[in-house]
Amino acid sequence: MSGPNKDSIVETNIENVSPTFYKEWSFWFVVIYLLFIVIYTALFIRSDGKNFMLSSNELGDFLAGSFAPLAFLFLYLGYKQQGIELKQNTKALIMQAEELKISNATLKQQVYEMQKSVEAQQNMFLLAEKQFESVLQEKEYQSLPRLSLSGTNLIKNIEYSNIKNSFYLVFINLNIPIKFIKITSQVWSMTINSTLEVRQILNIDEMKPTDVTKIKFYTLSYQKNPIFKDEVIKVEFSDLENNTYCYSYTLEENEKFVYFNKIE
Image (cartoon, rainbow, N blue to C red; front, side, top):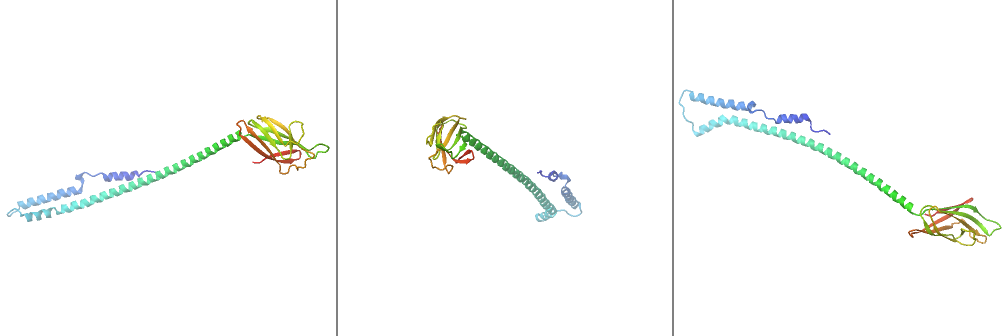
């Protein structure tokens, strides 16, 4: 964007400068015309014949006839001056229009830059909001108890034993301390020691972070419940602030291993 043309400003300034009055042709016209009237009157007075005073009407006619050309001259000069002023006003209006156009373009550019700035700030705000939500989610995830359950050494249809099926659950507490742990199964019995009985609820007092507990899962020979058929293992516990949790898992066998799939 550029300002008004320098040449036009110089030209306007030159036009606005009025020439010295004695250099104007109208000045010399008036001087010469008045001299003509004075000389003519003087010659008329010095001419032969009788001189007498003019009546009011005759004097009026004389003055009207003498100064009528000057009146028309000043009328013409008045119209000419008005034309010059109108021309100058027109140029001034054109310059104002150009300045308004430039100002309008500047304002548009400023609005565009402000819009870009607002969009950038909105993007920064959205990014900060996502980062904040991510931090909150991570913090929440870290604050929730996390457990690891995996089964090994799966043996099925054991003969000549009071145990028909068995595997070992490796139960790991991954982060915060938990207490009052209760594991429930509708099919499997559980034990931590060597005692074998139908005990489908197992209680553990507490587990610290990274504690590992190995639990034997088994079914007795006289039990008729089918295994790995839509059964659910429930793990209920509390944290140190007495918030209670209940995680449910389905069991999936894979050769010698048992997968505990958490139900979300």
